[in-house]
Structures are given as structure tokens and as C-alpha cells.
Image (cartoon, rainbow, N blue to C red; front, side, top):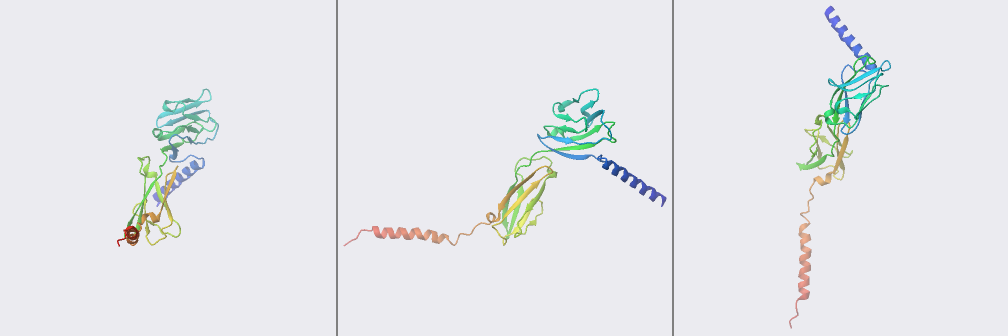
Length: 241
């Protein structure tokens, strides 16, 4: 019983420590930050007293450093691409590239625990393509990304926007949906793809998924020209006495 109490106390104490750190805006774990290719991203931190020295690192390599006796100094590929706010400690990285992905942290006596950030760089999503097929009275809708896009595919989410008069059923994959042929085919359905930074939509009208049946009208369409031709031949025939 004593061992169980000790273990419970340890877990509780760890929870309190993590809570206190979170209240000071410093997480027990690395915070995931998303940035867009060719855009800027800012890593925010907090301090309990004014900064006198700051070092930001990506992994083990220095990104930028500063102290109150010298100017800001950037390193490696971050030269002319970073801005360090020496008052707040925030670091802004400009013109992001996929190679900027990594874990970043700030080291300073003014920060109780090193703030860690995991940076994920995402490219803009392309517009999806929406196709449909009619099988056994059901319309199968499929939303696809046709372009060569392979940036964090695990972050892409699919969703469907259907009008209230249509019942959309989820398919075996999030990118698929089903609609019965008996529904209102004049309605439009939207496919939505998104990730933490971008959102793209495309739409389709259900009537385009069902081929029209014009077989009953075809004989009439061809009969009219034949009658007209026969009449013209009758009137143009010479009269024999």
C-alpha cells in the first residue's frame, strides 16, 4: 500500500511540475509549430526577467546568439533570414524552406527551462480533383490530389460538404463518399482538403455523374429529316403527261 501511495505521489508531483511549467508558457514537451514554404514563422518564448544573453539552436547547431555586450549574430544558412527580438526573446525565421525543419530551443539564464519547438514546414495545398462513378444505383465520389505533392501527407484531412437534401455516406477511405441515385441530382457537393495551414475545396454537380438516357428520342430525331427529304423529292419530280 505504501508503494502504491509513493507511486501516486510521484505521478501527482510530476503533473504539478508540468502544470507549473505550462502556466509559465513552457511545455514539458516540444511544441509543434507549422510554417509555410517561403513564408515567415515566429517561435515565441517567455522569460521571468529581462534578457542579458540569448542563444537559439537548431538541434546542436547555433542559429543566432546575442548578449548585452555585443550585436546579434546569425549562423550558417540563417544569415540574413532570422530576426531576434532581444526584449522578448522571440525568434522569427524568414523565407522558410523544407530543410528548416528540426527542433529549435532557446538557451538563456532568463528562461527557467529551455523552450523547445518542433518546426514543420508545409507547402501550399493544390486544388483537389473530384471524380464520380455510378455503380448499382449509388454514386461513388472520390477526392484526389493529382499533382506531385508529398509534403506531410499524414497531416492532410478530407471532409465533405453535402446539402441537407442529400445524405452523404463515408466510404472506406476519408477521400471517398457515397450518394444514392434517388437523391436530388441538381445539388452540388464539395470536397474539402486541409492541413494545419491550408484549405482547398472543389465541387461537382451530381447530375454530371449520371449519364442521360436519350435512346427513346433518337428515332424521332432521325425520322424528321427523312420525311422532309421525301417531300422535297416529290415536289421536284417532273410531271409526265
